Image (cartoon, rainbow, N blue to C red; front, side, top):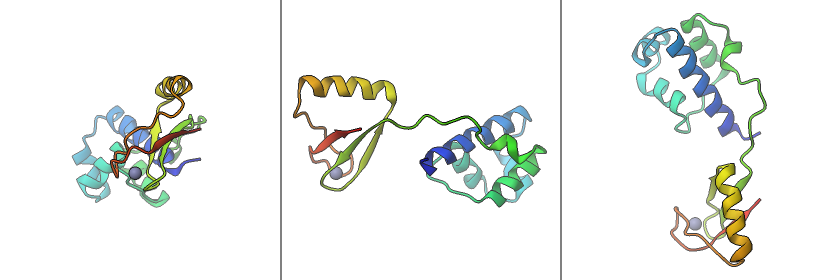
Length: 127
Ligand SMILES: [Zn+2]
């Protein structure tokens, strides 16, 4: 499973549980002694990774079990990706949009997309 997805799901749970308790990000930062930006990054998944120990401290501060912060349902895998053959940049496409992109490539087989990273038109669909 993609670790980025796991962190994203955990971040959502932290946000949900924090809001349930009526606690602001500032307050959670204060309770855990972490910085506000660290807490905000965890919740908004700006490529923030963190340890189980961190998660335990957050659960403690929210006065909940750490189990509440761990996703238990199977997470939808990203099914579609565009990969750049120049810089290896990967663009993940949501399932709904991926299907549409697949249909487009069925009609126009050699269609390419512009890479947001190196801006060359070499992105190809990969499943
Ligand atoms: Zn590229």
